Amino acid sequence: MLASLIASLASGETLQAIRRARRAAVAYLLAGAAGLCGAGFLLGALYIWLAERYGSLATAIGFGVGFIVLALLILLVHRLTATSRARRVTERRKSDLTAMGIAAALAALPTLTRSRAGMGALLGPALAVVAYAIYRENTKRRPRRDDPPG
View: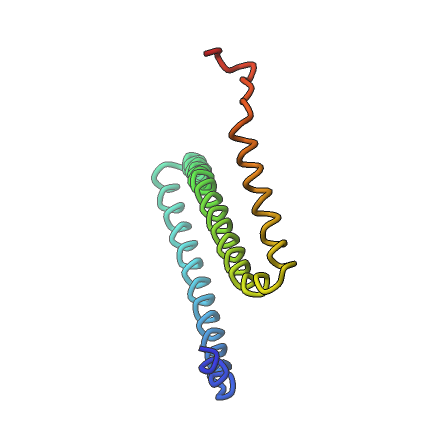
């Protein structure tokens, strides 16, 4: 994989890909701007048609209420999805950090097991974890004030 990356850098493929991506971004930006202009004119035409039919004041009030309702709906959907999105990001970050820690520990394991000091560095934390587990198992949990007795 590294060889193909170096080969693409050397051959200039990477620069060509960057240029293609830049041209595509400009094209999509211009198309989006033209689409927004078209939507704006259609909205203006709808306003004019409704103003002739129902009057300017009623149409302006209707458009205002409609856009406020649309804004509230967008905020509601964003708020409902933000918590689940944040939870997924936290879980992904936690699993990534765990995987990196395990990989680092496995990479350092052969070096640590070659010497006595390395074995001590491994056994010390392991014994501390075992001692803490024994302590947690043998200590009685105190009931909270709001817990019912029983």
